[in-house]
Image 1 (spheres, rainbow, N blue to C red):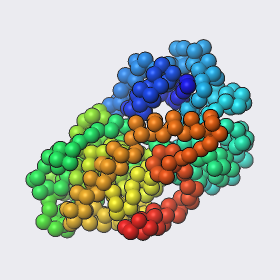
Image 2 (cartoon, one colour; image 1 turned 120 degrees about the horizontal axis):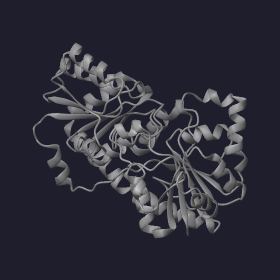
Image 3 (cartoon, helix red, strand yellow; image 1 turned 120 degrees about the vertical axis):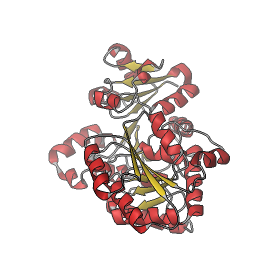
Image 4 (cartoon, one colour; image 1 turned 90 degrees about the vertical axis):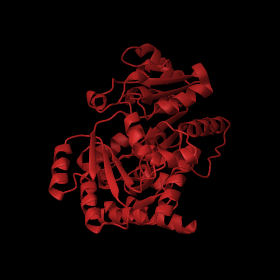
Length: 401
């Protein structure tokens, strides 16, 4: 079976999954990159070394080969590529295609009423509802968006991003965290409005004022961007410069090194965050996550009060309460961190996702579909964005949490 994955470019969030497919399929796996990586990403520490991998083909350098792979491969995985013309040619031919998509309407589902937008979505998606086309939903809010345009009925499955998975023993995780008694709180991302880095400065001020329990704390902020000068100014204004470390842009490996020492990871991105692979990485590093339920990855990665805490509505106050709880309950903090680690190493990782994908494809080609009960490729429920937090709570109560 030949399988080709087309996307804008390959990066460290996609390489582990591609490597896993390559190990399973050998020379029958291909990745088509449609454009060079932007300079902004390169300046953030991302690497373009993926272009040198043997299964990667650049459309702008090998157009004839890439066109042939898109049309003739047994299966096409189609992420966002900016080349809908090439994908449409395959869809019109009725060839098995599996789309991967983040949200259609991040800024609000009211945009679904746009006549021009609906025509575009019909041409790209809805008219193929009865064709051999399936959707991998990279985020928990994706199914609701596609349900609005009546696309992929009964053919939507959970998906996400799968950065590198690292394996540690329980003793290794405890040793990396240290035994100083100080609780290390980690935040990672670009300093831009949708990621709300200012929440961490407010948190530092509040925790210093409350002197929570007997635990000291320190906040580590990995990343940079347009709001970085303002965040450093706030640290001075709030009197928390001794409680916060700003690292600036770091390579993915450097960010992971910070996470490995962390006890709590705070993920404050809002509804504009389609997925949020830093959450995968922090959970894999054994951090107990506190995360905004509105970010795409959160409802699928976090099992409320089992492997982390999701707070509703992007509320700063609810986020702070969750962090305080973990500061005051060290055993719960360690337990959730270990469960977060197991979630990634046991379920939400590239190797597991690759195997499940090939198993699903085998079933589809034989006229059957047998999705797993949980994790990647399990059925993606259609849940309204405004009801997601309630759904997470109901699901947690059904598990006795």
